[in-house]
Image (cartoon, rainbow, N blue to C red; front, side, top):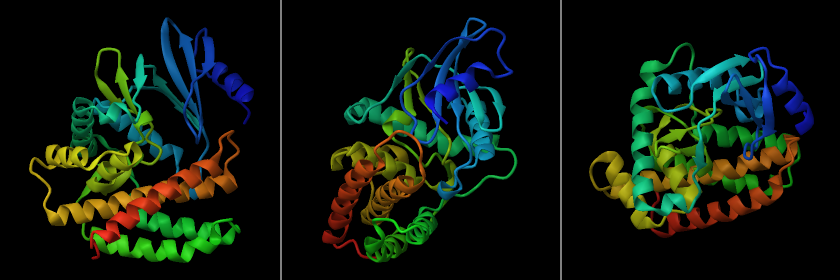
Length: 298
């Protein structure tokens, strides 16, 4: 789908009375995002089909989006049909990596994550998927091998590291996780309220994945990580929690890296996935080296 086709589809949706100001929005590397004005209100149209290689199922994204709306965590769902999700537009600004280095913003984001994990399950309806990163990494590796990825030679070592990290994480308590906490998926509304957006990868998981993912995506320093963990768990992290957290943080970085490796082969969106892969592979290698250097073996 070209950007022009996406605009035409958004403009022609049956939910509108007199759409205007139809324009693309920045962001989104698995879908097209478009802003539309109708009836004096603004909306965001998300266009995207299922992406089985990434576990993205649009029926599941819709179920989570509705639950997040009911929990007061995400913008309201206005309309949905196959491949289309229309949400209320919330005036505000997506957060950046720099924003999360501000202590107050980080604590507000941590509180939002805690509310998400606690409140979401009570609003869920129908079947809900799990998001176990270690299964995802093994599946990604199999797909990359089958499709002759340029990264195939690195996969055996990455799979060995995956197994080590999974053992280090150990048993987990399941929560409903967002599982894609890039800073851009946190929105600061004009009234100061934080919202979480984009539920493509949501599902039952360990809380450590969201916490480690946020930290790794924002390159948080150690003292900020400690503050985040202390706020979330209401107690300073001990050695065991640090080991499990660091392992999951590494897994989060590796998942982002292998996600991009897959996207190099499958995505038709105009985005430099090869550069994104290389950047995240460097970040993962650094995190894994630090994990093993500290004697963090399971």
